[in-house]
Length: 368
Ligand SMILES: [Zn+2]
Image (cartoon, rainbow, N blue to C red; front, side):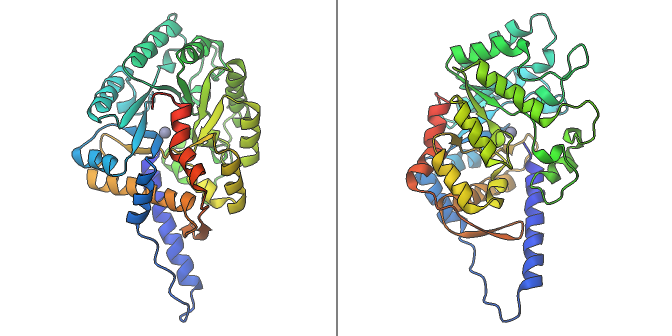
């Protein structure tokens, strides 16, 4: 979830575009073509009956519901336990609110529940978590989320960071796969969280706003590789568990690495949430080939949010411009400016778009 950093990124993009065109355009240069209007992109997006498998919605209003209906859009609303945010500290109120939201949405907002990993050292941790998850399944939850606080925040009694393959989580993974549900796994962060400051990285502004997740030069902190290896152990140990590695499986700069994971683990898929910029900045042909080759393994997600303090007209504009921008990149050959760089759309074939925007969500997250 990174709503404000997205707005910041957009501001920077705007500035970059303005600066680069001011610096480069001679007075006689032809006027660049007007960017296509969002409306036609959104009409095409709606026609595919899209599913966004990665959002965080805390409230609704009639205009939001109308937008979902107009876009033929279904959402997977993902819960997260985060002890640094007041509205994410408590689990049961989040579940209650999300179930009420799902009920009021006329089938447009599904629930991905979670469990409380901060209680991992408690004697009845597993039993309590499984009881609660099963109750949520019974009320319609279709998936379970684990978040980056496993690997990057929560320590065991011995002061060691708990990783995703800790045996304490095993019964929970077994329970999820026994129910035929899906694990949405956000493990680790973009490379830049471990690296030197890099304002050109699409995620850099997030770490300026959330320095608690910037872990470069922290002695004793797990490496990104060790966190992702723990995630991979979960895949290997639970071949019947479907796992969606959100945010491009946290391998956002390395399509070859993602491909190797998809080849090695048939129970693994990825979502695109909050990482579309990375795809846009890679060589177009390589991304296109990847998305065609792995067209059954990539789910469309955004990480858009509707936080308790969001103001409605603005937030709806933000949602729609994100969908229009993503659609233009994936489905058309139009050129957009990304970080001051012209980026040509991938113009993916219609069957690939069907999988990416809808079919894979249904197959990988049954119940959606
Ligand atoms: Zn998210």
